[in-house]
Amino acid sequence: MSTKEEITKEIEEQGAEVRRVKGDKNSTEEAKKEAIDKLLALKLTYKEVTGQEYAAPNARQSKPKKEEKPKQQPKQQEKKQDGKKQTLLGVGTKKDDNYSEWYSEVITKAEMIEYYDVSGCYVLRPWSFAVWESIQEWFDSGIKKLGVKNCYFPMFVSNAALEREKTHIADFAPEVAWVTRAGNSEMAEPIAIRPTSETVMYPSYKKWVQSHRDLPIKLNQWCNVVRWEFKHPTPFLRTREFLWQEGHTAFANPADAEKEVFQILDLYAGVYTDLLAIPVVKGRKSEKEKFAGGDFTTTVEAYVACNGRGIQGATSHHLGQNFSKMFDISYEDPAKEGERAFAWQNSWGLSTRTIGAMVMIHGDDKGLVLPPRVAAVQVIVVPVGFKTENKQSLFDAVDKVTKDLVADGVKAEHDLRENYNAGWKFNHWELKGVPIRFEVGPNDLAKNQGTRST
Image 1 (spheres, helix red, strand yellow):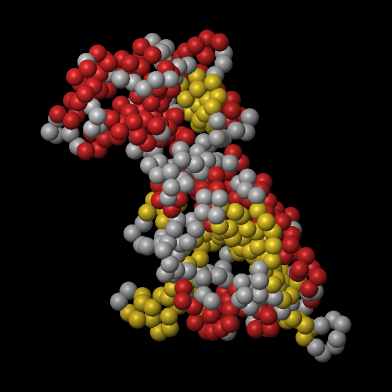
Image 2 (image 1 turned 60 degrees about the vertical axis):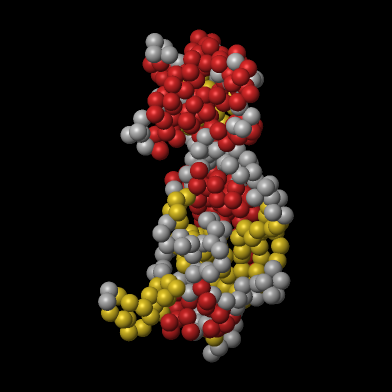
């Protein structure tokens, strides 16, 4: 780590830079903010090293100037009480004070999402998409062990297909988005964008099932769906377009179908407990809450302490023979000559809502907190306290440490940016929720060691 004297010198130099930028009429607001942010981060580093707030020499020596400061003192103290508030990177709202505002700040400042010019739609940046990829990999491996195969069906649904299952689609009807024009021409028949895929997939199931030997069918697709919600949109939690997986299976007997419902439910619970470190309760929905058109619905639910509410994590539905009768997914009954038997079906889904639950449950006043198994970066290696003469050797050591970690299967990166000091980097990576920070300084290098922070 840098010494008190080194940090003091850096603060004085950065203070001069702030005054220069403020006095330059050609300086942009962005340049001014960046200069101030670096100064505040240096002061935070000073406090971490010395255990005291930084005070300029003139402020320590001159009583008249102390008397002039009362108007500004509360603001400065408020910022220094929480290191995260000292830079634009920090979270300005405490989780327990206003969790909705806190949530919005965290997901944007931690670079998880970017707002888009269509309400309810968001850009999933690499930091959040990496979490989704980890969930995909884990869950996909689990369902393939059950014999499920991946596929893809079109996102467009004909009006005729929707009309075949009015009871099922009734719950989605207000949220169905329709394509009514192609260029400047009105379409002869509007086409819906899937809110879910039962009505998209089951006409094909009818064609594929001609005999009991054609069962079971076990298919899953990773895709997007659109539900044009009119409630207040919230990234990950309530969006008009979201990513999910939806599994659709068909069996020759109800026992096999019901068994799978609970196998999938166990996998969903594993996503939360094994990957996201979130305890969940497995249960069964009431008749009023169950999936429209299904026999029964099972669910995993998590508890969100900051608002005192539960959140639905994923659902696994037993559809019985309701959909197979509507779409005529049937075959010659081998036990009753001349009669048709209908398939027993399930559907099950997990969406990017998992990411929102993770943020709400684990995040704190300093920002995002990522469970190690889904973090894009598990360890960030940061060089500290270097000077021009020892910079390259230190950077080489940091690079070697990072490569050694990667070789051992750890998702590690280093931060060698020279335009930001160590304090700023600490704040940045803590805000982004990296599980472990590993610091390497000149003294550490001499002792062949480093400092770990979690």
